[in-house]
Image (tube, rainbow, N blue to C red):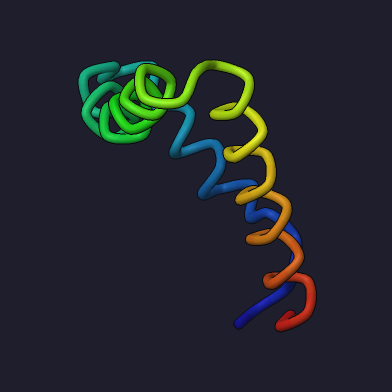
Length: 67
């Protein structure tokens, strides 16, 4: 793997793609939003938000330990 920084060319290309085709962004984000909505319905907003934050912290922690 190259550097740990964000490649500016790839980031700029991703932003341009999102601007030109918002449908791609919607299709990409839809499963996450649907999952959040189902969890919200099943266990409530605050437990769902706490779970999402906890999973995010765990994923970032694992990435920091490996990288």
